[in-house]
Amino acid sequence: QVQLVESGGGLVQAGGSLRLSCVSSTSISFMAWYRQPPGKQRELLATITSGGMANYEDSVRGRFIISRDNVKKAAYLQMNSLKPEDTAVYYCAASWTLSTFSYWGQGTQVTVSS
Image (cartoon, rainbow, N blue to C red; front, side, top):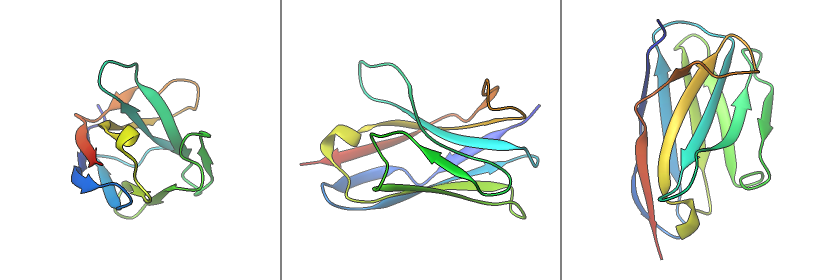
């Protein structure tokens, strides 16, 4: 069983930045970040392969950067130019394939004030 632990959420003013971290209990091929805004469905933000190839959804491309450190078995999400609509619970996910993310962290709250 793969365990994921996120950290780094908090309260930030609009225009500010936050960096989320996710540490995995084991090395794994694909890692991703999702978020779930209040009253909405969970949405994919970005994925990254073990080789560092990243993909982004349009909603965050150019503002958020996903990265990983394979030695630390960690993935990161650098969030810049934050907007109130970025307020959500952010989840780290991991999988051996890109088709379905099987492992999930507990989530970390990000709140952006206007």
